[in-house]
Length: 153
Length: 249
Image 1 (cartoon, rainbow over the protein chains, first blue to last red):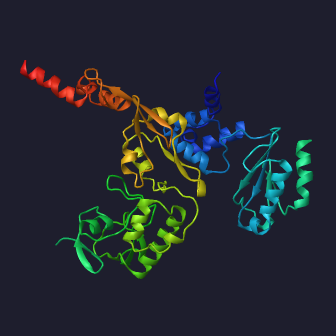
Image 2 (image 1 turned 45 degrees about the horizontal axis):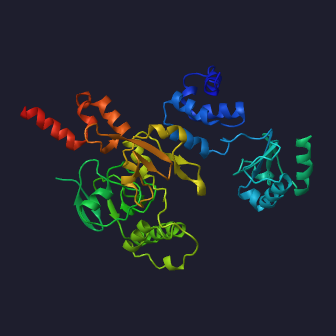
Image 3 (image 1 turned 30 degrees about the vertical axis):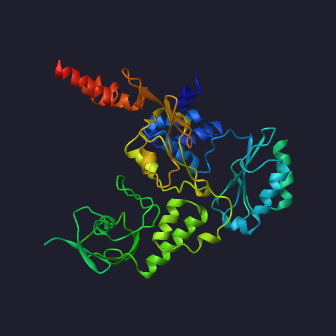
């Protein structure tokens, strides 16, 4: 079974209205695979009847969709205004040096992906990192090393 | 009595459905534009065609390419506010694309050149200003092969690989591009666009062997205008010669 066929099967349980919404389908694929494969874009274009160029536009617009495979764990570091004021840039640089990778990339062992996001809506807890979908607020630069160690174990 | 609007203290008649920009252009009033193209639907992205509405439903600044002419509307194209805001918009664009020729022309036409000489750094002379003309041309006349990707400073126009085969090679995108960064060039039997890495096969006239149109364009005509399906395979010159032969015989 090809990947396109497999993706199409994942959409079987959806209502016809859900199947006409590109963002809903992209979210489903992202949750299922951890990223959005190129083939999925074509499947979604076919289902929604929208041009592939527009589906790609949606998929690249939102930070919650990734077009590249991600690591087993994903660390998202907020670079929004409140987090920026609270030193999010230094946290990002620290993470990059600890992981020996750049933002938007996955570590060489394929375990951790580092991404930056623009505000996740809990600025009162700045600076914020999201680890595998779980928000950690008021993060201290010293907490980063143990956090990564835990993920690797 | 015909309906009128006031532009820069002068009264002008307008047709139903006409925009303020179109009334102004028709009467020789200069309003700078970038994303506007008369063959495409207005988009209101560049905001360079701003005018100030003094009397109307919503007083304030409006993009004239999207502003419908209505009886009693009073607008100014050169108020202090318009000049100030437009000046900032042009300078922001210049900051990002300082050597872009079409932009320099707009800046000159608007009397804003002073900041150009102070700009530094490496810049392309032909750059994509993200006006979206090509994207709209492809959407309205082609097959939506190209579209915007990403956002913020990474926003760009691109063609997903899977859509390359959809390209008709109609070159409408090239035609409406204000800067000339969208270009197709003829190579051995194909036309190529380096910006999006699109290649489209050229059809060859079965009689004289000349390349005269792209294969997908001819296929499109064949399916949509069945009566032409035989004649369209030939180049225009051979088609005329063939027709002449048939008439004379």
